[in-house]
Length: 93
Image (cartoon, rainbow, N blue to C red; front, side, top):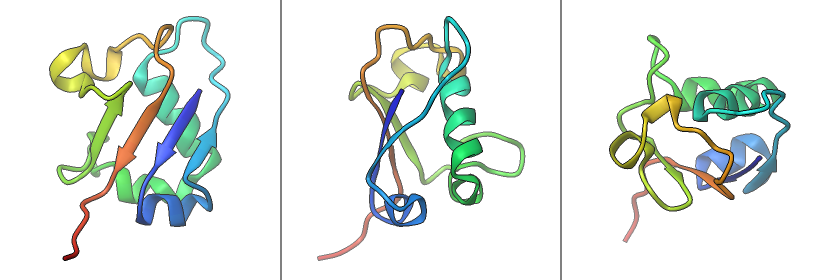
C-alpha cells in the first residue's frame, strides 16, 4: 500500500512516498494506517488524537477523496485504492 506524505509528515518519515505492507487480505483504511504507524511510529502523535481519531487538522485522502465523507471512514475497503495521502496543515505565503 502506497502512502503519499506531505510537509512535516514527509520530514518525519524521511520520504514523501512510503510503501507499507498490509497483512490483511481485505485491508481497511485503519489497517493501512496501522501499518504506516508501525513502520514510522513518530508519525502517530502528528496524525492521531489521544482517542485514536484523526487529528482535526490532518487531511487523509484515498485516491483523492475524503473517506470520512465519500466512503466508510476507517472501515473503507482499500482493495481498489491505489494511493493514500496524509496532509498536515500548510501555511505560507
